[in-house]
Every structure is written in C-alpha cells, then in structure tokens.
Image 1 (cartoon, rainbow over the protein chains, first blue to last red):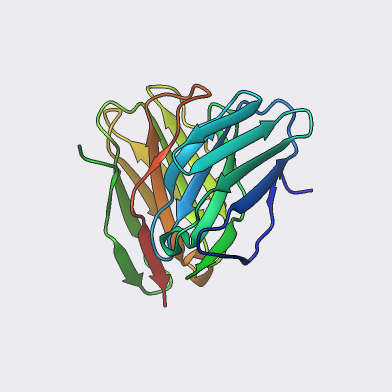
Image 2 (spheres, each protein chain N blue to C red):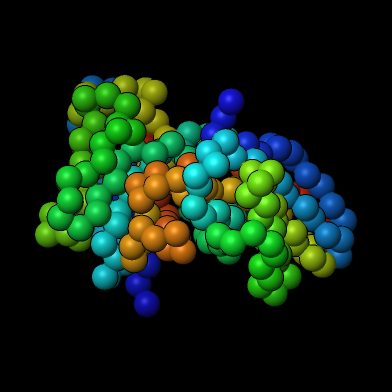
Length: 110
Length: 115
C-alpha cells in the first residue's frame, strides 16, 4: 500500500464548478497535511496546509481533514481554467519525513 | 523576498560524467530537502539537512549520490558516474523549521538529462 494515495485523474470540471481532490494516507501518526499545485514544467507551490480535524478555508480553497478515516481533501470553489494543474497531497510523518502523493491532474474547461 | 534558488535550471550531460546541482535556500530556513521527480511521477525524497545535525540520507538511491550543506546554507547535490535513469527534475525545498505547521517551499528545480 502506498503511503500517500491520490486518484491520478485526470479530473475534469466545468468552469465555475467545485473541484474535489482526495488523498488518503497510511500512517496514523502523521502530523500535518499539505496541498501543493504544480503547473506543467514548474515546481510545486504551496496552496495550504491543515493539521487539525475539520475544515480550513482560504479564499476559494477549503482543506478538509479526517484523521480517523486517514483522509484529507481539497475543494476548489468557482473553478477557473487557471486552476488546471496537478495537485499534490503531502503528508508530514516526521521532521524529515514528508511523503508526497503522485498527484491528481485537474482540468477546468471554459 | 527571494525564494529558493537552484542552478543550473537545465543540465545535459553524457552518461558517466559527474554533475553538481546547487541549491540556495530561503534566508533563515534551517531545513533543506532534496527531491527527485521523474516525468509524470510524484516526488521522491533524497536527503534532508536540519541545522548542524547529521543529514538524513535515507532516500539516496545509490552511493553515486551525495550531498553537502556548507555553513548551514547553500547545498550541493552531486551525482557521480551518471546513468540514464538519473534523468529527472531535481527539486530543492527549504522550510523555516520542521514543526507540523512548517511547509516546504520549492525552488524551480534542475532538469537533468543524461544522454
């Protein structure tokens, strides 16, 4: 079982819709959870992080964490074509131990 | 402010040659990480430096790979006797610390191509 799993996609949503990206992780001791966006040929850029159960909102983005289910998600409201990218879920399991999922490719169609 | 800086941005070299990749972290960031990303793949952890502590080298794929960090700032990743399977984007990241709320900030990477 992979330590951090994401649906590779591609996930396609129409402009203005809500995009829902999901991630599961295997280590119950994981401390914090990060979402990065990576445009093709570019480096990952941090969108947001969460480490408490529940929801965390930042503009059009909402991260949701359920530690009991070992599940973290990212919702993008009012999706825009510029949101089209690969979204990486990262799980911090220790000081030096950040594990990344393979990413979900999102396409927002105008 | 300045982000994580990596050089060169692209490197093409022949199989068997040694290469050196450089990373200049964000000023004040004590933690520095190297990752490798192959085409269409996730990030593969290579090595981690934190302050003056011994580095975590557990992700280095072979003894051809080594890294150092001088003065707690700039880091170089060296690959000796390069092989074609070493072709990838090498990403460096730094963070202010290693607490749960400390995210990693990435440089633009070095795209390495081995002919």
